[in-house]
Image (cartoon, rainbow, N blue to C red; front, top):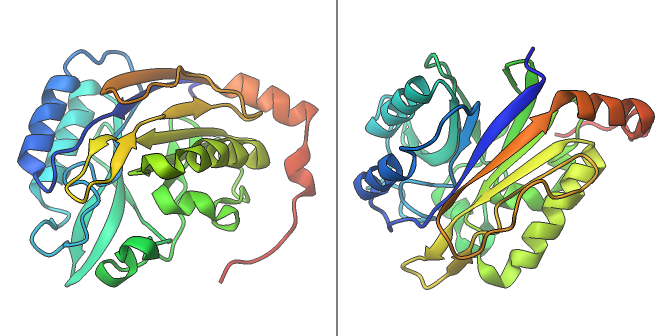
Length: 258
């Protein structure tokens, strides 16, 4: 088990519906990364938050999955981010957790964003994912999932929540508040990775990506309107000590999600 986990949060502008340009820009941005365990990219990092999946979707043998495996091997780090996946004619906003040796674990976004019509273009996921990585239990979720605390409830004793997003400026205060709420109520580290820039629909994004500890304290600087790699160190020992002193999770309500 690894007691400390080194995280690289990739806050980036996204070229609209252009996987080739987005990966080329990431190739440059990631050049100087060293000695990290996890690299986290935004939601739909190859396309932006597009509602026309058919011409953009890849399959699990596609170029982006291969690119993520190459990066994971090169940096000897897990690479995490969501892309548009076509599975038997259904389209998914799918989070990929790519391990350094190439193993892939997936999570399909459960709460599709009805305000943008995501529920019409994409199939909702049904299963929560808990990744076991270097002795850490990690729960990866996507954007709109952040608003639904029941789905993220820590019944698996996970150590880290990850949210990747395209979360626009008008609702950015909710983003910051809810990330802290999810960390506090689940006694878990929580990382939110948001994009910057303006998409083709005119929606503006200012980042505010961050890492938060199990008590709601910010561990990273808040960076707005800037492409940047933000680093965070998470301590398993600190998490265990606080959970021992403050065993709030033992008093949680018991329920089943259908």
